[in-house]
Each structure stands twice: as C-alpha cells, then as structure tokens.
Length: 317
Image 1: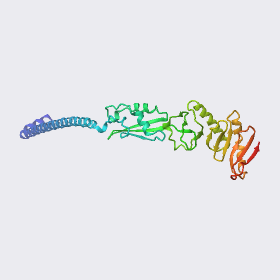
Image 2: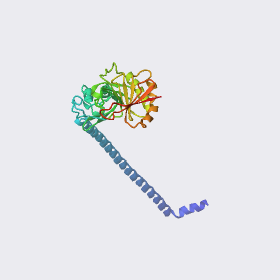
Image 3: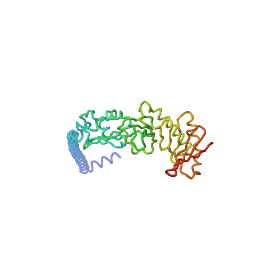
Image 4: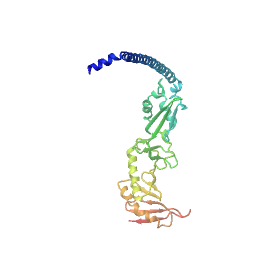
C-alpha cells in the first residue's frame, strides 16, 4: 500500500504541485478577505464612535439649551404675583368663590398685610393665607389653588351652616346666628343670610349677645323647638321670645302659645298631638293653641268681624 502511494506521488509530480499552489492561493485569498473585512469593521467602529460622540454632544447642547430656556421661561413676570396682590382690594389677582355669608371685602381685608414672596406662583406657600382666613369664625374650611399665566390665586371657602337665626323682627336682618357645629356668630359683617330660609328664627328684644344670649341658651331653645316638632310632626318656622313670660311657637298649621318656659314646658308640649286633630273640627280659623296653662288647653279663634270680640273654645284634657 505504501508502494502505491509513493508510486502515485512520483508518477504525477506536476499535478501535486498545482494542487499545492491552488491551496496556497486559496489561503492567501482568505487571508486577504479577512484583512479587508477587519478594515471595514474598523471603519464602521470609527464611524459609530463618531456618531455616538456627536449624539452625546448634541444631547449636551440640547440640555444646556433646555436649561437656558427654562430659566428664562421661569423668569417671565406671568409666573410671579405682583407686590400689591394682597393689599389691592380690587381683587385682580385673587378670586374668591363659594362665599355666601362672608362678603368679599372681609376676606380681602384679612389678607391685606400678607407679604408676597419673590417666588414663582407654584412655589408660593398657601399656609399663611389659610392661617389668616381661619381667624374668620364663619369659615369652616378653605381650599387655595394657584394658577400661572397670569399668576393668580383662587380661594374656595366652605362656610359654617346656620341653623338658628336671632332676630328682633321677622323681616329684619339677624343680629346673630347659631351654626350646626355649635358656634354663635355675632359679628354684623356675617349677617347676609338671605339663603338660610330653612334655619330656625328666634325673635327677641334687644339681645345681649355674649351675656344673655350664649351657645348654652340657644341649645336650650333648640330642645324646646325639637320637642314641639316631635309632638306636632311639623317644622317650626320661628319661636317668639320677645316676651319671656309669654312665648309663642309658629308651626305650619298654627301658632302655639307656650307661655312661660318653666319646668313644666315639656309636659305641656306633649299635649300638642292630642289638640292638633281638633283644629279640623272647628269651623273658624284658629289663631293659636294655648298651652300656657298647666292642665287646660285653649283654641284661640280669630275675629269674625271688626266689632265682634275674640271667641275662645275651651278644651280640657
């Protein structure tokens, strides 16, 4: 077998040489191609590096430009409140909404001494504004919103709800009112209560607010009113205390004379539910139900003509 291989090699020397030459050329071409490919790859890497550096430079320039523009944008006067924002009573930069009892000028007066910081509107603290406004007793809660372009402030007021009005006459303005959370408001600036029709009206003569009329006294009157509403099953429109010894309560159907508010008043009020059905049996109009007596009830009738005397129908238990 060895002799055959030697024989083949020696027999075809030219062909072997050609084969070796072809292999060498193939290896050379492969090396040349590999070198060319590496050069191309090197050029691509250089180009990518340059593009990357260019992008980084452009990002840096863009960042600088954005910061520059943002700085000058934030320096625009529309972001800043004028120095006279709180002292100016015309209200150009302060909007007040949802205030029905407190006049605008009272709120603006409360803020007139506040300092306006040299800060963009969104950095201005609202705590000093709330602190001043919470001094107004009618205010229950406050929401402050800040707006830009132009810089302005919106104050949303939540007021305490009046449930009892102290008046000297039904058509007169209240001199004080009692809120649902137990506060007696007496300042004349807060007596614009045109939308408080559902509130109880308490009529009295020359009330001494803070002395005679206190939160405790209003609560006592409320107990009497609630007792009347419970036993009459009707809403009390007002209670007349102008004569402390002869008190009247007005309900939808009629008026009720309670007389003196002594220790027996609640026992006398309990008799209302037995008397109200009798009103329908009386032909004449009822002026009031008299519960001022301890055990005797009266139905006071209105006059039938100018010359006739008032008629009374006595009802006993």
